Length: 145
Image 1 (tube, helix red, strand yellow):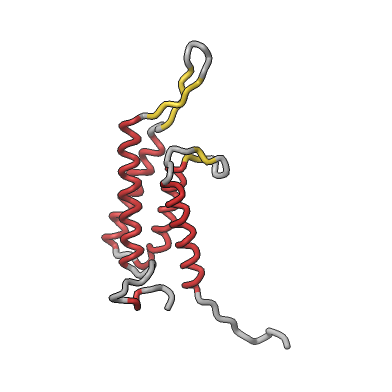
Image 2: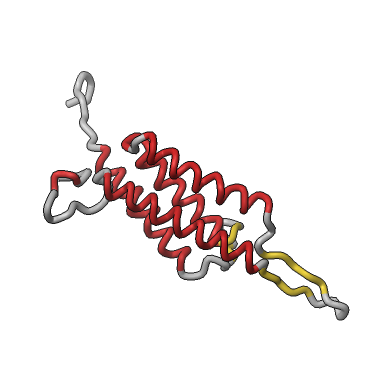
């Protein structure tokens, strides 16, 4: 029996659920220590978190209202600017030749707050548009039923 002429069906909701779950796991993993450098990604966890929340936003973007997209893009742009223009973690050499890592505390506080605001906003949009577990009062909003 050949597959010629037959059609297959694929429910993308299952794939989307898996992607969303993996992305949310990565955000939670990064939240444990945002200042940790991850050699497998060659980035700090705050950078990985930002890129991962951005991926979550893209998963929901087709369902988001224009006002929601505008708000999320503003948060995204603010974070991108800080990451691009501020050296949050830097190295200093002491007189004895030892190098130490230093943290720009004020820039870090702003970035951390903005990252968490971005995450909360995106997670709210995922929930509002039925891309998370359904609420008991309205299970029809689940992406898989």
